[in-house]
Amino acid sequence: KAGMITFPSLQSYLTKSFFPDREKFGEVFKIVDEKESGTLGFSEFCALLYLWRADNGLLVCFWPHKQNVDVVTDGFVKLEEAWLKYDAEKTRKLGYEDVKKLVST
Image 1 (cartoon, rainbow, N blue to C red):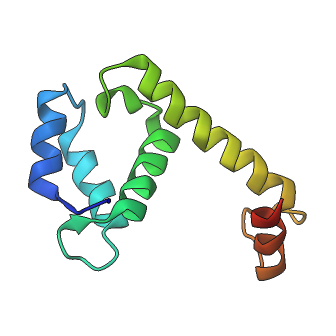
Image 2 (cartoon, helix red, strand yellow):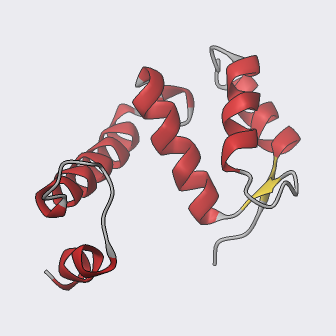
């Protein structure tokens, strides 16, 4: 079962993992912390990973093993490819019917 993680806990872990930019991390954390609770649920954590990867591609600061980074990166690439397949207008937004098609294939 996925739990919650606080900003200080995640920042502490990442600092130990040679996280390159603590200030930028704080900015991204605030963006994805939808409820402004100071904690991230699983979906918010996934959003943080996606935004961090999209901005600078350094997921290695989250996992020390390249194999783990590759699995997460591959998952994001495949999800984005599927998304773009159903984004007929190329707006990077999907309507309700588009999302139904995406999840039913």
